[in-house]
Image 1 (cartoon, rainbow, N blue to C red):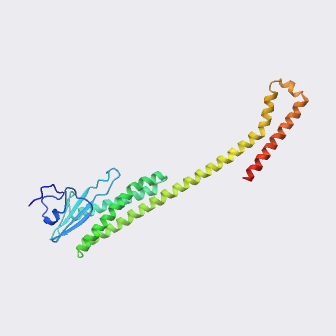
Image 2 (image 1 turned 135 degrees about the horizontal axis):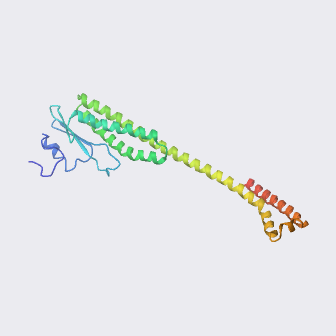
Image 3 (image 1 turned 45 degrees about the vertical axis):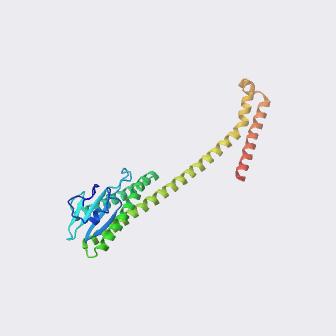
Length: 247
């Protein structure tokens, strides 16, 4: 009796009902089904940043005569090879992005792609490992499993490099910011010293500014006050220097 609900399995595939009845409308998670010497692999296409966590399933069917079919991409064995190669190519591209990354934002963009890709590749490896265990004499599945192991390892290394790169650049930026703050503090102290030195003189200039310059120069008291102002400036500068050293 046919299932009234639509199935992700092509109608012309002669799969046992035990497999068809286990699938709903959506293929669901990556997994393997083994019934009546028929093997069905449900894998996911490589995730992308804009897929909204909706995974596109790819089905691979090995019948009881060791013939392979695939959907939606046709080709059977070759389609499975191409599927794994897409994972490998994406891992290589992300590795190039890590090498070219310079800022925490660059590394974060890589991590946004690498983390879901690593989860998908790891689940895919588990499926192929289970399929190899179900068909221990299948040389093809052994080769596919080994390729999945290499892909998983490559993506894991890219994820680790991206994480380390982001941590390093963030620490480096924090160190540079601390250095900038330190240099700004030094410049501020220098400015304070200049202000402390010239403030008494500026005050005196403001006081005597109401008189004509030629009158001020001929006032004996002007030179005395000027000398006192300079000495006061040095005294204030000296006191500030002692306080800064004490801190």
